[in-house]
Length: 137
Image (tube, rainbow, N blue to C red; front, side, top):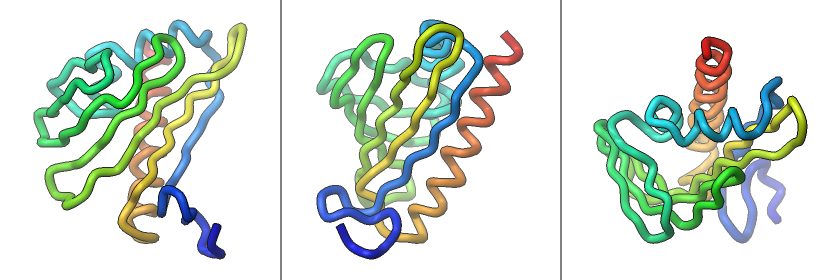
């Protein structure tokens, strides 16, 4: 580990954003993998593949590949917006029990500190949009 916040020897620059929500994990998961949920966090116009190795492309040109999918728990995938020259890895994970669930977005293999800060803002916005969408259901 280096002294730079958000940089590790293994995965380079990374960011994590989490929020505990007042909903059971099943309800949060069902929304996240629905077309409306996927449009918020992954991008519009794509159904989330459920098997490792499956590729995806959103309407706005973000491309990637599913690395792992554990129903009800997490999805890990590569993520490359159309204006990037490199892949990053994103993991969406849930934890908790009962009526509360913690939603976590973690992204690694970012290009540097500036991209890390941009992605922190992105995932914070995504989290707010997921919270608002769940509240409307």
